Amino acid sequence: MSEISVLVDSLYSKLLLRDFFAKIIPGALVILSVAYAFYSYDEVSYYFRNISFWIWVPLIGASWVTAFSIQWFGEFSGLIKYYNKGNYKNLGDYYADLVRFGRAAKEHELQRLERIVVIKEACGNGYLSLLFIYILIFFDYFVDGGSIFTAWSFFCNAWHVLVALAALTFFLAKMHFVHIYRFKSYMRALINAHQPSK
Image 1 (spheres, rainbow, N blue to C red):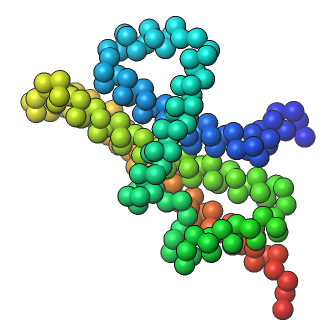
Image 2: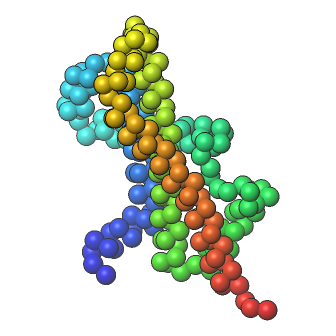
């Protein structure tokens, strides 16, 4: 196995990729959109170009924490799901399946399930952060004195970009729910495969 493969596998096993793609990036997008709501593009760009490494550390931490707020709202509202509730009576049954999977799975099978979780959470928190940004831009526009007429004019000029962003958000949401199903299917298949035959 090459050094790059070892590095990628260790990133998955230590949950670093899940933290980066499913937490830090969605949280950073929300923080950046809030910054642009209060300051000009030039001010925000200048600040981010000139901040030191020691400022980046708490900013990354703030992005990570912000994503948990996004995820909580998503789970509370049903816009994203932690697990497929239709297949379990309660959270305890879900964790019992996870324990059975952990006991039966080999290292590469655990990593494969972790990849599914990374994609599931990244797509869920990603599409929800984009929805938040769209709402923030909409309200900020009218707070700054924008009118329906100018908004319609902007839509007519940039409809192709807006449609592409809407499609991206929709497909991220679809991938989130697809990977909830894949997570459950893969976990149950492996548990069943390792059960002693009667």
